Length: 263
Image (cartoon, rainbow, N blue to C red):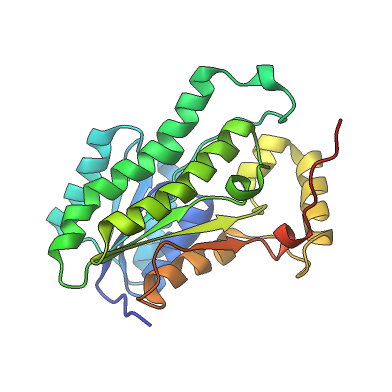
């Protein structure tokens, strides 16, 4: 296992949920962390306090990954503080909750906004850190947080599923292009317990979806921010000969999925 002591990681969208859990787990393993937020300054501060309590140094940075200048600034700030960037977790994401059959529920602007964060933002962040990682003897690791939506066509909306599918494909492209110094992998969580889906679906539908996913998963569980974070850390600290891989984190739910019935 790769030792993360005094290494440096940037985790985008890390003021809550999976990003926050990942930042905390990295800190517990001795890694210094850039905690990024777009709107949730209070949440980012709480995550930083938890990371620092674990003994890590932190940088809390407001940035929108859809803006390339913000991505470059984040990478530069990390390099100026610690002189290196060892890991990037492209976790920042956005969506719009629209049932898939409601084609009039999504506009071109919705697609562009979702893609600008979920796909373009991840690309820009990878580009921003790539020259720093290439300059390091040990290179670096990038983990893209995609979704089972991207490989099954489900999820909060068609645009979200399409963007996560693009993220998976981009993982393959960048893994080929950026070796041998950089390893690029992706995790694909299924239903994740937490406030993001609860706020998007509402309490009642959230509870029903969670129960349905648990009942239909071979392991009888749904993912949590912590279990997804554990998978992310696996790609950073685990086998150093793995790149271009996608790990599904859903309790096996994808194994029981059947084609959608006709309406």
